[in-house]
Image (cartoon, rainbow, N blue to C red; front, side, top):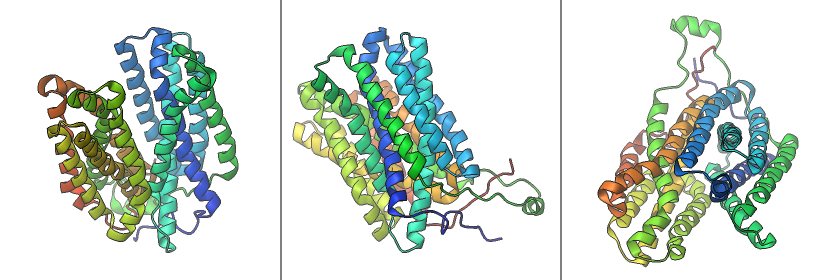
Length: 411
């Protein structure tokens, strides 16, 4: 029996639908960026230890991973829109609750809400983006997934920048920025939810196999094809590389170049700026050269960038090296997630995004642990090796839009 295409024809590809999905990525990025930006103020207000902050981050990440698995299955069964409409208000509620949380325990509850909403929304908005991309490609249009991820990066930077903006406008310092920033973020999320309620495309639920198909096979079809776990391994490596670049670039430049911390922050500026820029360009590259070649090129660029980071000392060469890292890793995750979504919808996407998210969370911790043995600069050989792994295994990825591999179980 030929695999059916669940995402063509019926999916709305109008400009309104594109704008609504784009807004999902921006809104998700703003809330996550705002949360990340207020962590120092939250730590001061609640007098949190390093261990307390680690618990908050770990529990929030775990809640996101659990919600990804649930959200992927719900998106496949009932279409992705409903998951977005549940996930976004959960994020807004979590931000508002965190703004007024008087104790560590209540802050933990708020972070769980944030993580659950963010994880569910992450999978469902990517599922919608993949369905839109497939429909565009089948009607003669171009790829669009990297563009959406670029908008997420813009939203993330904007959310983090709210801390500086609010502090400057209202002349606030320290813990004073916590509640205003989080309430602004929650309000943006709530207003965005109202817009999504009106304009968000429903998306398409994936068809379930008939009982007769299962009977002929003699067993229930597996929920996730084996190829998804290869994509998961690539996602894990790319997530770790991206997490390392985002969390350690500023510290690395400060320590290795022997500059002030304010100058060292240019490392993160270089990484983030190049990530955003390349994501706005990557879709055209994929349409012209294919996903496989683009992934290999991005993996090579990331590998060379990390090798330069691990062996260079001057400020300018280091910043150029981090630019190469940012340009490389900026391409990786959107293409891995796109391949997963085309392969099997929300279930496969949830699996691969979980691997990528786990790598993003684990990367900074692994680098921190290795730093004690090798030193911060030489530790960058670790993500370089992982990026080389991506180069070697990129050949396993589908090159152009693939026939979907959809094998959902009956339950």
